[in-house]
Length: 523
Image 1 (spheres, rainbow, N blue to C red):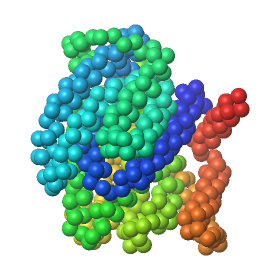
Image 2: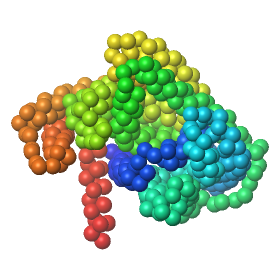
Image 3: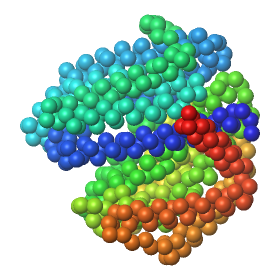
Image 4: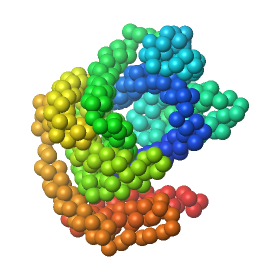
């Protein structure tokens, strides 16, 4: 295995672990906020107050991070690390200034924004919402800085710190909930601002260690800055189109029986956690490498690591899909079934989850291919393909919803994920030449066979192993863990026997990383 492959595998392993840890803290944050505020109008107002800054402007700022990485790597390869650092500093300064202006204007216009958008709120809820929005608008300043630092660190092969920023962020918000008597919901709003500020503080020492130097510079004529702003708009439009698709799903579901929208929403959240941990981790690690290979004109290396990342996703996503298909009901019961979430809710949600799961591999490969285009500084192609895919999705949804109700909407989303992969791959062939995908087909067939063995093992385990305890929740957790363990062991055994080199690489380097972690813990 080459040094680059080893670094990618080790980095991916650490990022997956860090992502799981960060998501656990995020889940704990939601549990704590729910415990203190329930489904009250105060929590509704806080969520509404974050809608505009948290969805619209966060998407714009995230687009800057996406386009920053390939440009930074181009400067790094073609010019010098000093110039790349200056570009990073300039990008950070300009985005913070722009975000500050937007935050001040947005804070001032908050009463008007709330009265225009949230007409259904009563007067007390409207007043609380605009008061909270005046606070929450200011977190976009630190969010913008966070995205640039994140891109800088990832480009300099520090992938774990940008993921771990969720830890101090969530701790601050959790702590603020315990100060409810002193500050009420206003304290939580301020905590969100401080939380995003903590992300910047958390990353800054690591960025400085990697060579980041902050210098005030507002030269808007810098060709690289101009390129950054040119590339951002298509990325933002592409992500906005996907949001439109989600809106259409919910709109169509509103004509279905009660609970259909909620079932789609609950299933979609599980959907994002299940495949997001792995696909986001792999794409975050591979993206800077692809950018660097492209800037260095190492076309063979570029194609090699693109195929490596696709094969890795096949090995991970195919068995996850199979496991969710056979355990969807148990998974939903474990995560959601309590209180008002009854057996009917489980039935509706697990049905949507099953059809969403069919698209896991498509979602993951689509993300990698989109990042591949961004790495070669082409943000137009993913945008065009994204718009076409969403148009196809809307047509599919209108047709499938008649036959499968809310499950048809989930199936439409899954089908279009593979349509997107086809469109992006076809465009990529035209852009950089043919990519040898024979190994990917072989890996897919082997992963499919191993997943079949895994499903049989899980079904047998479900029939033969039924642990019962006096506590229903513990019973669900215990059985699910046992069946999942049986599935993992059976799948891993077959994959290892089939001698898939990517699986051997992952296993060997994961063992090395675990030994390193154990050694550090011992010290």
